[in-house]
Image 1 (cartoon, rainbow, N blue to C red):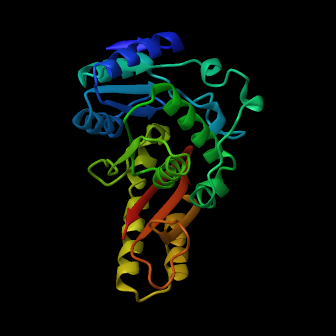
Image 2 (image 1 turned 90 degrees about the horizontal axis):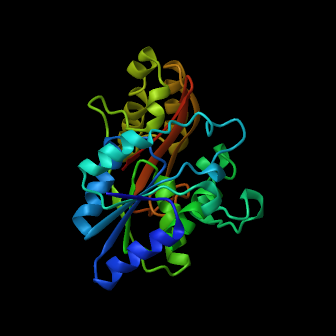
Amino acid sequence: METISGLDELRELLQGWRRCGERIGFVPTMGNLHEGHLQLVRRARSLSDRVVVSIFVNPMQFGPGEDFDSYPRTLEDDKTLLKQEQVELLFAPAVDLIYPSGLNETTCVQVPGVGEGLEADARPGFFVGVATVVARLFNLVQADIAVFGEKDYQQLAVIRRMVKDLCWSIDIEAVPTVRDADGLAMSSRNQYLSAEQRKRAPVLYQTLCQVAEGVRGQQQACAELEVKAIQRLEQAGFTPDYVSIRDAATLQPIEAGYTGAVVLAAARLGCARLIDNVSV
């Protein structure tokens, strides 16, 4: 596996692969890799000839008071895992390569519709940061396919909408949420949980499953299901940002005639902010 941080070296290697007609798969990450990330890498491997993984802790998607400085950075351990997965290239750029004009003087990408509400309300500016960095990484790597996890459901919707609107010829593949045995969605931020909090954390997934069953049964209004879910999370020691039942395609509140729904939630438990979703 090669590790590259510079633009010229990146372009030279990728151009060689393209001249050979090889299909390039891409997995953008912020590092601190776990089994959830490795499932993305494996999907990319199954769909492409060469796999590129990027590790870049993106300052633009962190708001004031969030955990940018303390976000776990484990580059050497990440390299070991990626080598075991036979990844050909790790792209680990510096901030000034991604944002050569600085964060405040850069062209940004804003995605309407699916990029509004939910996480965007809880973390203002988050999806501008996500869309902007992913757009830049897509332009740098120019892969044939990129793989993302369904755990970040709204983020996946934002990226798909951006690719469609900007007419990029890159396929977006989704991998189902990878969970621990007790149902907790794998996340780098799970390590912020104390031992006692970790025992309570699966209540988030259990609550979403209950809401999904309520939607299927259609015996309670969505608003009532959402309120009860928030109450259950609060009783378990969470501080919920939202629990929301949305149209699976548009992420708008569901109306008569919808063809699929998704229950999304974000809640704080101690120092950790956990997000999850369950499709209906």
